[in-house]
Image (tube, rainbow, N blue to C red; front, side):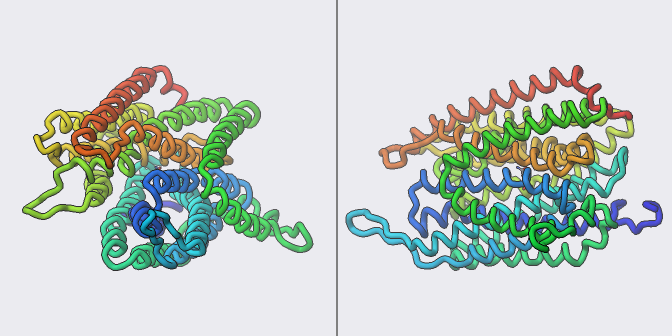
Length: 508
Ligand code: GLN
């Protein structure tokens, strides 16, 4: 059957539907994320601390929710319906973000008056996005995996192509929405993000026929059976999803609860994995699940290093990097788009390297790739430490160090992120692949939070005179800790790989 199917670059057309959908979804996601902290601090006059905490809570919740979205898709909805539900919630959420109300004002005594109605609309929109991503993000990745049979060695390259879509969305959004939002009005930036998501939903609705029934509910009749006075299970799920939006509306405004949820969700996920491994898995499934869990735990280290991009590295770019090029000062946020750019440029190179190495039976396994990825992230911070040591008299650091750091971080990301997605679909038992994909993103959620804690090491009191010089010292301190963290954790993983690799059962 596969042989007669039309192929694009050797892959099924379904991959390109998913590529385009996820490109637009990430366009909206990163377009909004690029504006978020500036919108909060400049328009609604949040303090830096309050803004950072809100961004952190939001990012953590966004990545924690796919556990529930994945579980519901595995058990009831199937991936296709789950992505559709997520897509609709996302369009609504991004539309809501475009409503800005009136700007906050500060009186002469320094008291800030905010537009509370606009802020509640904003929180509600965030909640729609949180639940929307929860249903979409993990499940769309699971559909990518479902396009490949077990043992199909196009799986990794399929995920690399998919990953390029993610980063194309991110690259253009960071530039476009940031520019629109900052220059023409926040609602234009957020609105552009929303239009992007609308395209994503349209592409998915049109292209869903290309998944050939591989993303359907596990038991359609069961899903459509009426419970609760004539309402089908399917509709009960949709109603519960909407209730979840209301619950998230409250939670996102309270970071202590977010913290508790992260801890509880991680423990619950581990318990479920162990329960499944003991009671429901065959020997090979158990072995693979064990190594997959180790991979996911190490991914927390990688993302905690990598996610400095949105906190300490971004502020470092703003405060310390010499951004003057040909007499013009570049916006600090432009450095962020380097990550997506490097991914787009190097994803095909990495995909090619893995395929070439495969020919000689030398393609590193997922454990080795993760170890390497964490080491590369560490090395990236090494360049920043070097930059800080070579600081100019005016307290500025040459931009090349930040460019090199982003390059190494992006190469590390290519060893971890697409490989991780691919590994989840490959090593997880099919019955819980959606849930495990959710756990994969839960690791990012935890990492976002840890990244925030780490970034605090370099907190700078910008009100102090001469803060730029102090800043370099604080950043050098943080970056050298992260440098060693990368080398040590990556090194440990590389060292234990020979003992773990047989649990992967790669040749079976
Ligand atoms: N940049 C990637 C994406 O948006 C990775 C996200 C993550 O897992 N932390 O899909």
